Length: 425
Image 1 (cartoon, rainbow, N blue to C red):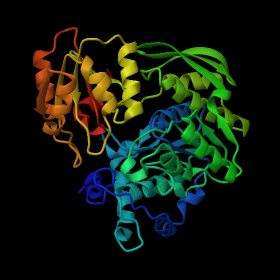
Image 2 (cartoon, one colour; image 1 turned 135 degrees about the horizontal axis):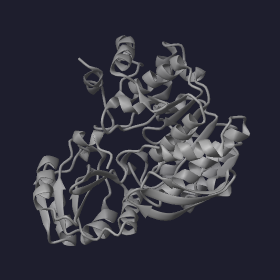
Image 3 (cartoon, rainbow, N blue to C red; image 1 turned 180 degrees about the vertical axis):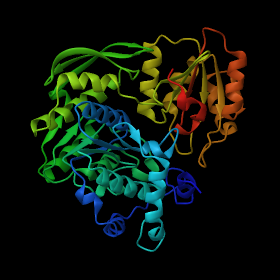
Image 4 (tube, rainbow, N blue to C red; image 1 turned 180 degrees about the horizontal axis):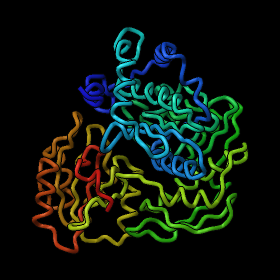
């Protein structure tokens, strides 16, 4: 049995319905291993609906370029579970991960002990980073914030990205309700870095910050980051603020990454003010070296195939804007989604522009059968094909795509294909 097979035996709320984390039980579990969460140095805790992965990747790369030993814990994964736990862009190895799982295994599943895939991986990350003596840890919440099992740490900075509609069946049906869950990571007197939010979400976050005597730093008061050009090579931006005035090309494609960079730079500015050595030259290097797969990711050039993990309103809007900025007018859309995901934006704004739509079912227990999507898709586009599987869809596009046509695959992380893990566009 390998590490992935061991983990697959556990309750996985990324794939099965549920949201019943018990932070007090998880803390008791961590007590068995010496309270590693209390000994981690310089944790930066990130929550939000959109942009968490981008901001975490930018911080990880920039702080590494500054010479620090930086742990990174993110989810979900695309290629391997090992990529969720990284130090300076090196994933935990299979022997390392398996050894930690064997150490934890006797305590998994008992009453008042860790039970889930995410709790166990979070424990491994804490122990791994502690043993490696990381200088900083970038910690991304899995779901929500308030009772997410990452929320046992005491960070030096908290970050809340743009809040939008996602996981409403678990977090609440309104933006204030969702924001209340995200606000659960705000800690007393720990600085909070925010992007500008929709008014109803902003009120909740600001009220929570005042109640905990927290200084709020809006990223746009620290830096202006303006997108200039979006191409297949990345996004050129102009930066003006605490680190000076400069232009550079981010490897991530899409104008929305300017907002993510603004948040990351605000965090880095706050770190510099507390004594960390952060130079503009290192930041430029770190930004240029940031790797983030699965977001407008050109996974093939012949034919040109783009994978984007968009699966909620804001991420579909970002994808739509990028398609327009890239002047992609002739495209096939491969689409599949999971149950309880709202794809109305994609339905109304992206589907009508596609030359054809191929409907597929992701390799995920909650994936929606293509036949259930067909009627809605056909209201927007007459050329709808039920491909069924990603294998069928890819065979079709390779056989039928013309030189000038692009294939865009979106709707779920779980449409990602293993053969793309080595592709770099």
